[in-house]
Image 1 (cartoon, rainbow, N blue to C red):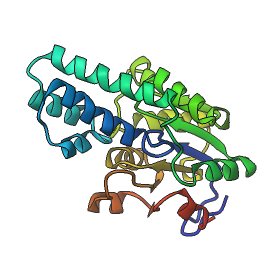
Image 2: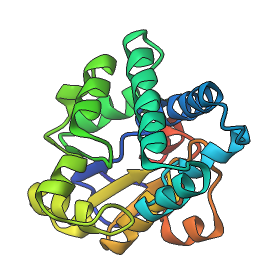
Image 3: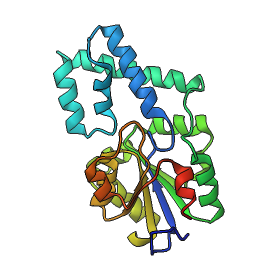
Image 4: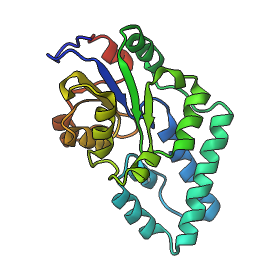
Amino acid sequence: MQVKGIKDDIKGIILDMDGLLVNSEELYWQANIQAAEEEKLGTPRDAYLKLTGATVKEMQAFYHKYFKTDADRDRFIKRTDDLVWQWTDEGKLKLRPGVQEALDEFKKRGLQMAIASSNYEDVLQHFLWATGIRNYFDFYLSYLDVQKGHIKAKPAPDIYLAATKKMNLPKENILVFEDSSTGVQAAKNAGLKCIMVPDLMAPTEQDKQNAIMICQNFFDFLKKI
């Protein structure tokens, strides 16, 4: 696949999931707000945006700031996860604009496709079944693979290096799609070309340096093929 602005022929696509393929980041944000209000935490609503694409270290700092005990933190996280799972079953999880069309185009062109997500395996599968896109992908990597492989989570390059190895393609023939700064940095650290499709957070100056292209949505990207 030839893409305007990219000299190499693209033969493989690696995609993040949350906030890129589906609107789950928005659901997690709303679930965080609801869980916090139930716990009467009194934190500002926009505080939870800091968890969007956050590193493990950033998430730990956030929880340390707002929760007195680990039990309080764990109850909050479980409530958030339960709400998103419930809302997914209720049909509130949606594909982001242009995702269906992009997946169809990639499949038509015979590209290898994989997901490299920091989310849990059961959540990843739940989201893919709910949106009907599970069978587009040759394989999936999740937080389970991070744990099993004893590799570091994003922004470390590990999960993208693992995906590249499994795809068995040269790095120059692979294109990564990400929505968060953490993910874009991970792809950059892995030596891969990354296109950013932002979700809740606007691109930073660092994102503009790390990504080879920033598209408003997948419809925007499809115009460049």
